[in-house]
Length: 400
Image 1: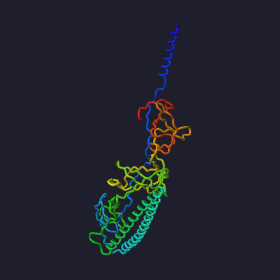
Image 2: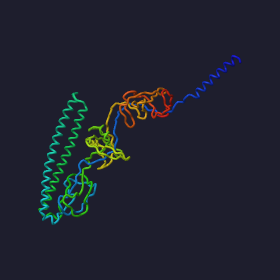
Image 3: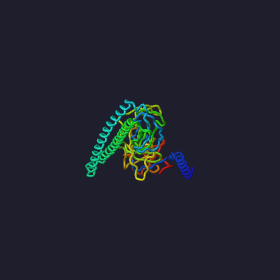
Image 4: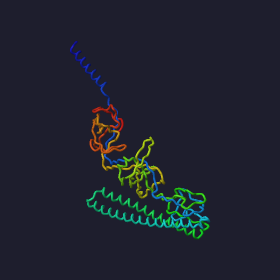
């Protein structure tokens, strides 16, 4: 073998070895990537709730007699003070001293209820005035730098709560005065023998009919429920949360309300102090807590919530809000280490990936707030497979 032949054979062997190395080296692994962003972040508790009118009124028969057929149906509008039914006293009741005593006792009870409701309204009005004074003082202190925004927010929440309490107290006073007027009218009708048209039964509020319990003509006893009315513009939302979730929220927390494709804003007004047991669809007993949400007034030009009493709505209660957060997809995170206490991601470094440990501040359904380990603009692999390892060459097939 000549020297030239030996060189040729050596070159051939080197080329063959290089070809074998190239043929059997690991091919780039196809991956999907996403970019780390800087954006606002919210961690929410998602649940469905139901609407509920804040004040509902049951209109009852103010005296025993014969009820004329009620022509109203559920959904019909009613006006405060307008007649919704008529009752003609029966002939025996006109001469019954016991019936007269019962009506007089109802007048006395109604007068006491009016006095109590007026006192409640006065207390609520004083509490609202005090809350407004506190809010003005804390707003001034915040402007001077002596108070945190969170403390002022609590004062603003107190004003909202006291305003709602005053509205409820005023509605209770109006309802008590209406009951008293109906009781006095029943006494007068019984004393005068009643008119042929009968005693008009009036509505205590303007609103809509929710239910009609006694629609047909016929005899009714004193106190028989006739119909239920309410103002559907005054709604609140009730949502039952797991007790573990309820412990994470506080009164005043912001709420996103979604119904029929429209979004509305609200605030948590109250977290009820007692839990109850509820069986889930899977047959598991759960401890649940009712949370009451108030709807914020809609912005100008925005229609109000187009729902009635007992409608289902979707809620997202905000438990953590960050105005400027580093966000990475939740699908890029995986547990690092045997303890399972830390998180890691695979980040792109040229054509290869490097494993980075990250500190997660909070997680949402789609994105996680990263406290350390990533910067905006980094690209991370989403849904990493078991074949992906440190330093592995990759080929991006989706994402940027």
